[in-house]
Amino acid sequence: MITINLLPSEYRALARQRQMIILSIFSAGLIASVMIMFLLGRITTAARLQSQIRGLDGELSQLQTVVTQIKQMDAARSLIQSKVDVIQKLDQKRLTYPILFDDFLTLLPSGIWIVSLQTTPEKNASGFSLVITAKATSLTPISTWLNNLQTSRYFHSPQINTITSDATTQSDTFTLTCEYEHPAAAHG
Image 1 (cartoon, rainbow, N blue to C red):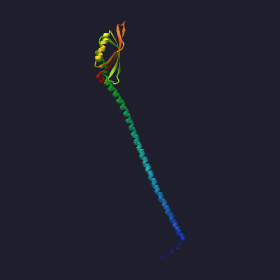
Image 2 (cartoon, helix red, strand yellow):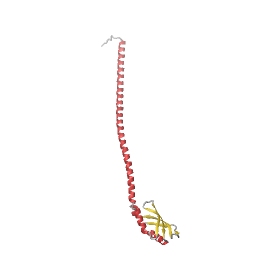
Image 3 (cartoon, rainbow, N blue to C red):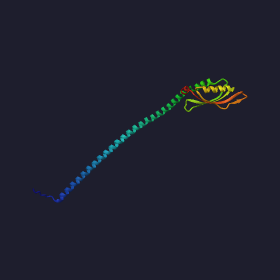
Image 4 (cartoon, rainbow, N blue to C red):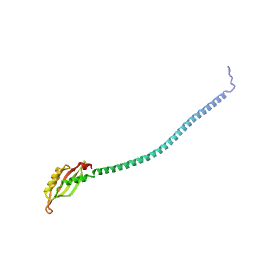
């Protein structure tokens, strides 16, 4: 079949050019709309994430308040625990000196009087080091007292330092050191 085209060839080129322009505009519009949709999606995602961040910041501030309260409670608990520990130690040691003096006085013979008595807790905390300055009417009570301390279950390593005689008071002054350890005194 034979087709006769009565239109000039420039008209066909112009029509083709118009079609290409329309196709280019449509393609550019399609690409622009896809990019706008992508940009809108990113904007809504960013807005949603910002909203979540604000919500999480609110929760974080609430949790920070709780954490601060917990730290305050822990500090208060530590303070109370340290006070309880001190009270327990005091309770354990409250009978230490009465027991020490009960044991001490049963061994002290007549004729000796104590001038001073110093106690120093031992490192193992179960006894004391004693430094006693005393006066005696003669050497016999000193000997008796030293013998009593040596045979005692609770007094260990008694040692007498120099004995000084005082003719005006007719007494002998001396210093005695020993260790004291009594299970009941150590545990209250």
